Amino acid sequence: MPALLLFTACSSAQSKSGKTKEEKMSTEQNKNLEVATFAAGCFWCVEAQYQQLEGVEKVESGYIGGHVDNPTYKQVCTGNTGHAEACNIYYNPEKVSYDELLAAFWVAHDPTTLNRQGNDVGTQYRSAIFYHNDEQKQKAEEYKRRLNEEKAYDNPVVTEISPYTKFYVAEEYHQNYYNENGTQPYCVFVVKPKLDKFKKVFADKLKK
Image (tube, rainbow, N blue to C red; front, side, top):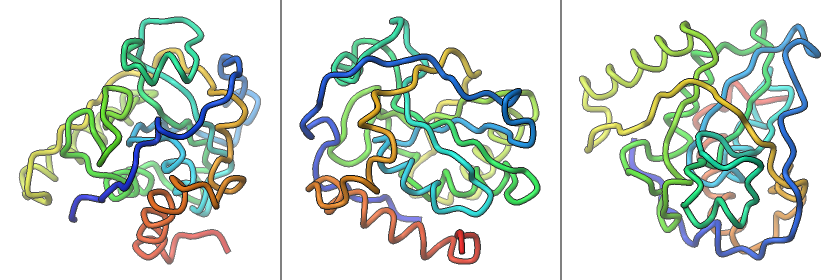
């Protein structure tokens, strides 16, 4: 699986002011859904990709893994808050499994580049899996181990595997970004090519 090339930086897009809010959707409110949390570079790309999969009911972009409360996009983009741009993926396990979401994660980005996806550089763009329970942790670690043992990539997988902590939902204008800003340069030159590749690989798993 070759590395995915990025054309320009996510952080170079014009940002708007907005206040983050803590995660408001919970599995208690949606008892039939489970949650997976992945960081794979710019969350605009991750959101657009996972929105395509059958069984995924909601994708929410936000920030996780840092040491600053209620960070803004501008703060996270400095790389100084410790947060990663990430997505909470709410899914129906009767339609799509965590294993399938993991398989999509490894294809969705290049997990061998440390703190970087193409021209998006910084710890906020790191490859990471934030597990919600021991089963997710074990599956993520096993998948990573097998990829490295089988040398699936030219370089070792460096994906961080950490427990899920506080997730801050990103500003409203980041949500459903590609669908609402498809003509924006970053969407045209970066998100769309990655999305097209993703859809080809998972053609039999896409929403009808």
